[in-house]
Amino acid sequence: AYSWLASFGFTGTFAIASIFAGRIADSYNRGLVVSVAAVIWSIFLGMGSLSGDFSHLFASRSAMGLAQAVTTPSSYTLLAEITPKEKIAYANSVFSLGIYLGGGLASLSILLDQSIGWRGAGIAVSGFGLVSALIGAVVIRDPRHVATTTTTTTTTTSADAAAGDKDADDDADGHAVTIANRKEDNDPIYAGSSAAAAAATTTPVADITTTTTTTATTESSSLNDSSHSAPLATSSSSSSTNTIIETPDTEVILKEILNSKPTVYILLASMVRFMAGFTIAAWKAPLFLDLFPEQAVSFSVDNALIIAMAGSASTLLGGIAADKLAAAASPPSASSLASRLNIQTNATNSSYSSLPSSSSFPTLNAAQSRLLVPIVGTLLAAPLWALTVYANSFNSASSALLLEYLVAECWFGPAQAALYAALPNPNLRASTQGVFSLLTAVGNLAPVAVGALISTSGLWGFSANTPIRDALLWTVTPAYILSAALFALAAAELGSTEKNLLKS
View 1 (cartoon, rainbow, N blue to C red):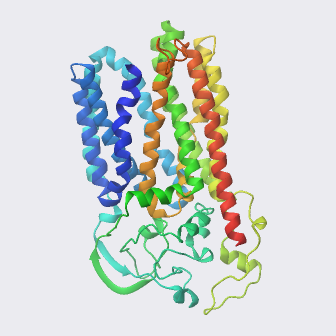
View 2 (cartoon, rainbow, N blue to C red):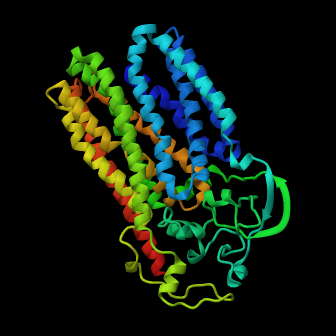
View 3 (spheres, rainbow, N blue to C red):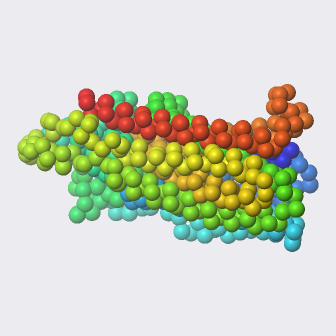
């Protein structure tokens, strides 16, 4: 019962809602979506605290999963639009700090439970959530829904590019962009995503009508820059309006996402990584209490500190390291390459007729470099978790768990940033976050499987009464290794796609 409540009770509705969460983020004010979802989550947490039986508690957890699923795509796409591109991995890491700080507080809730009971603890957290939701409603603003004085943009044709407009789109539909002229290719953070974006231009997802804010001194708006879509040439007419976004069908969106191999590999790697993480989160307390029952209070305190301090440090350092690796590995801009090769350009011909071979670029592009962080961190976590599970003393187990958190939790921000780079179209970001959330829900099935393994009935009739040590060793450790392998495949695909494009 515990394993179902801790995992699938939350993820059933989370998985269903995640399918539509991306479209909600694309269609509505994301600041309002986040705030309303927080209110719903808090209300049902309070209702669960007042429940009279398991079915009512399970239903409340399910409603909380629904609200959480809607929150995720809106939050991450907002971050992507308002964060400087060179700090995107770090921003995602800061955002994920809530997981570790909240996890630390959750561990300390054992002490709160001893003071006011589990019902009182749930109601107290519910009240805090409502206050946070109200604060969010006041301070969170969606750039798409803030009315400003704008300059209407128009999509240019290839004739504009021939006239020397390096920021113009390459076709009349506004989907294809010449690789030498894309601002993203000059950006150290999104270098390496050119191939994926260019490939997407042959099968545009949908026509998206936009209006972007501009000033007399800039070529394109900060919103357009931060959303990483191709810059558009501007006309002289001005008006006060909001951005209007037309979203394509879900089937078309999913097809476009799944046609990108690096995107698929990153999504699968994240799902498997979540399997390991959720299993540890759900079962490390029962593990420690089973092995060291006299250390219940010590575990509560140690676990809170490990999650809050080691987890937070790992995720922050992972984001910083990924951004620095990406900046160091970025290839030079097309204009810089042209200068080195003494390629002559003029106002009537802005194309670069000769580019160096792929061997002239650094071995790893920016997106690949970011993936080094989750690859290395996840691989190191596997043996440290084994040491945690089979430690002979409480202090040894706690020390191994501390080291495991320090290396394992660095993955999230870099993986998110690499996912943005792998996407064939930046306008797919919210929908991809919905798929990401869905796979996160699938990852929550792993704790249920562990619960079955250690039960008297077993998993589908097999491996009944498995010792908790063995169950956690042979589920978490292989998941870590498989996740690292999938991240490595994603990095290889990102490099292979870019090299093929450069050769073409």
